Amino acid sequence: MGDYCDPYPQAGAEILGFAAAFTNISASDIKPLPPESPEIFEYPLLLLACRRPPAALSEKAAANIRAHLSAGGTLWVEDASGGAAFDGWVRENLGRIFPDGEPKTLPPEHAVYRSFFLIKKPQGRARLSSGLEGIDRAGRAAVVYSRNDLLGVWPCDALGKPLYPITSGAVQTGKRLTLNILMYALTGTYKLDAVHQPALLRPV
Image 1 (cartoon, rainbow, N blue to C red):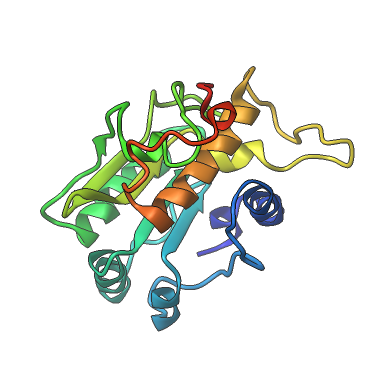
Image 2 (image 1 turned 30 degrees about the vertical axis):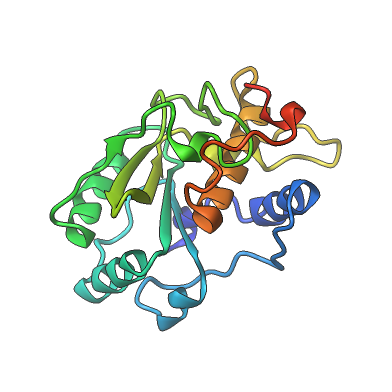
């Protein structure tokens, strides 16, 4: 889809290292795949992050993603544009994947906000939305949509300083919410009522 749909290629290693430090998640890398590829069925979580709108999804791509999500997969869509352009593309093309559904705001008690860390104030590098949106299929958010550029909190220089301007407090919260989305894709809602390691669950 172009490098504008891989806005932070250096973020993948940072995310996987963070996940390995806090959880038993083990993954070697984030693999780029076209949405038409049959290989997407080998992965429980699909990520689409763009700085600007790509070409519209083909019918084959929409059908492929629909089949993946209907079988239990999760699609995480991240708006890295900092504006409204990509948001319009997202809503139009999600409508092609699920004509009978549209993204709706996920309530504060949703499992994605407590799948590992307890998140009270969702934010990323941007703050275009007060929280995540999702499309529900059979009682779970098969699509998780963030407009706040969560991936933008990850790239940093050799001294650990963020490479991009970030609002106060957003780095920690953005990283924690990123991990929550990963855990939600892997575990669903089973941790909804679990309280483990109170220090990790402390609200941020």
